[in-house]
Amino acid sequence: MAFQYDTTLICAIIATGFLALAFNLSIFLIIGKTSPVTYNVLGHFKTCCVLIGHFTIFGHPLLPQQVIGIGLTLLGIFWYSYIKLNAATPPEVKASDIEQVGEDKETLVGKKEVEQVPSSPHDTKESDGSA
Image (cartoon, rainbow, N blue to C red; front, top):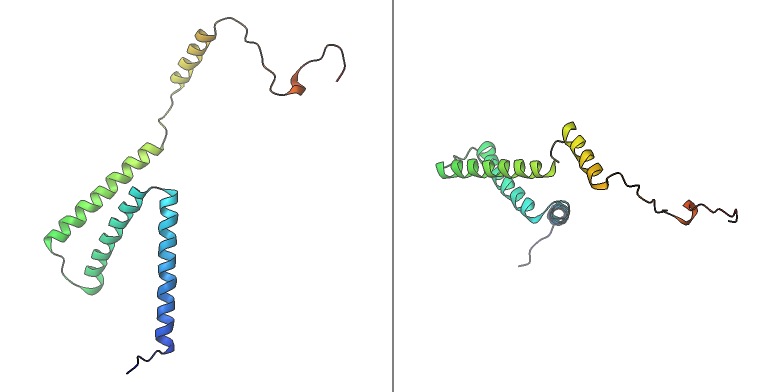
């Protein structure tokens, strides 16, 4: 007895293959743009969404352990995001800090004139007029 393949089943198999391809491509892009840790955190967020969707859509009850786990996971995700965002933003620079750097630079250089090094051969001055 052979299995009967119809067009609906074949279309479902092909659609599943394209979804798997898109999923794997998204993993590649996420890890390439961020980090494996960020991808792992995103995977935990997806699991929380699945559990919440299971409760919301299908009406299945959540166990207390699941509620605590979802809460702790979301707290960890928000904490990780907060740390990542604060590490990515440069610290605020005050005007007094800029003035202090200018004074330090003047102290280091002193009153000596610094010889300018030409950045290209065209920047040199020829006194004899030949090019």
